[in-house]
Image 1 (cartoon, helix red, strand yellow):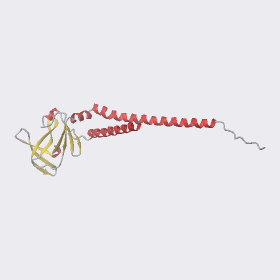
Image 2: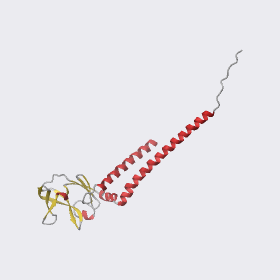
Image 3: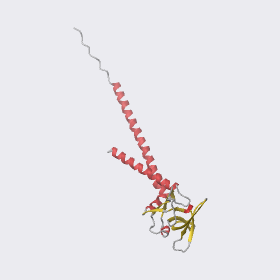
Image 4: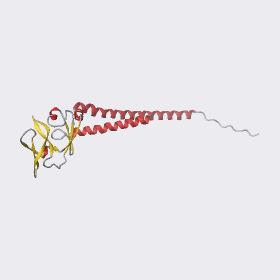
Length: 202
């Protein structure tokens, strides 16, 4: 039973550490536009304002957008756009691509408007997307200050306290074992030695 509990605690500890590493990475790898980015993959947490700009997504969803670096004319791309001094994600079809020594410039059709816009490659997020329902709201809570305090620092503190407690218990048991061995040695030393009986010769 003790082994099962020990294995269970070990698995739980590994899950907590993996979760803490992932969440810490989400907080550290934030790009210039305020979103978590791991290499070619960008995580977009959808709120009500963002949901109104994209089809097929809802408030609380999580978008994982990949930059395939194979964008061609006619592709749908996702890019950052400034609205009321805030960055939002939009999507549009590419109508023209111009490249020079400074990078690429994508001309896109603006949705619901009979005009185009020029998007520099630095603002292009990618052209592949996957939608994960309700995970965006969870990630928003986890990345908040309160979430980081109670869901990152607190679990790590619990793991630290548990290991300190286990170390103290081990030391205590080892000390008790040594005390018992000392007591046994003292008792053995205090036992009177039996004298051998010698037979008298007749």
